[in-house]
Amino acid sequence: MKVIVIAALIAAMLTFANNFFQKDERIFDAEPYPTKLIHKTDLFSNHFDQGTHEEWASISIGTAAAGTPVKVMEPGRLQWYKIQLADGTMGWVPEENLQASKEGLIRRARNKHVHLWDNLDFRNRKTIKEVNGREWVTRLETASPKLSRGGTPMHFSRIRTEDGTSGWVDDYDIERVGWKQPRLIDRQEWRFNKSAFLADWQGKPVDEFIQKFAEPAAIQHNNGRDIYFFNNIFLYDGDRKEMGIQAIARSGVIEEIGRTGRVTKWIGYFPLSEALRIPFVINHIWGIFDLAHNDSYDNYGDA
Image (cartoon, rainbow, N blue to C red; front, top):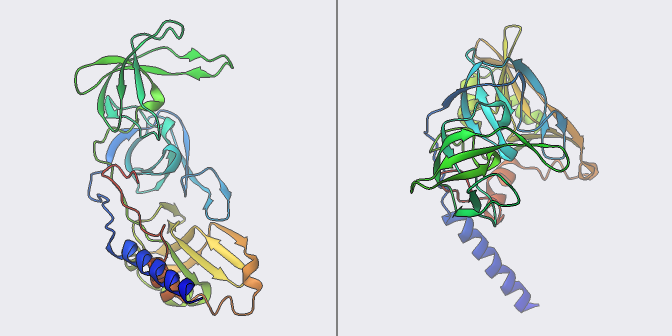
């Protein structure tokens, strides 16, 4: 028993040291990237199509026409990007709705190299170079779409790498947003009891809310009110977990706290479950003992 206790203490100390001393290397101050939409598209409150899951929720907050100038604010998961319209509306769109830039970064891919081919004849093409990592490349031309065996259109571009080598690649392997340094937002996840959270924030300036919880994931303008979406805040109300928290403000003051989605959590039926959700513990202390709590990122946001 004594050995088990000592081993547990050593593990806890190592975990604490790992999280306490680890630095998050994200870059925050890159400029938004100006581009335009090439398709009419919905803007969503999260980097997913509309729906509710155990850990996220997303709804459509508006649409924008093809040709609309936008600013790309930050990258998300699964090739989604947060954009901003001229009226300040912000939301998430899939990458294929953005105009491809003349220059861009090779997309990060795990356990593979990006092959440059000498031609697009699948039977006879040869690899002339393998690109490993986030190389900056120039698009020289785009080929007409080719159909796969299943009839799906496949898109290819001829590019020039930094050493002057030219060849063909799958369009998917090049990011469409042409920034060398993505704009990245550092967001901690927060969890609170709903009643206490509402008491703390209703009637407060929305600028204070943003300063506390980071730049909103989305912004919607609706009948004189501004709705700010925060996907990094989770509220607990008995057996219910609320996600995609909305700070609904008029004239810069929060009038109401809303939600994008809600699920039922069985643990909420336990008598002491709400009492154990002490914000200081779950938002600060608990992270020290969580090996996955802090990640280090390179300049592109890759863990």
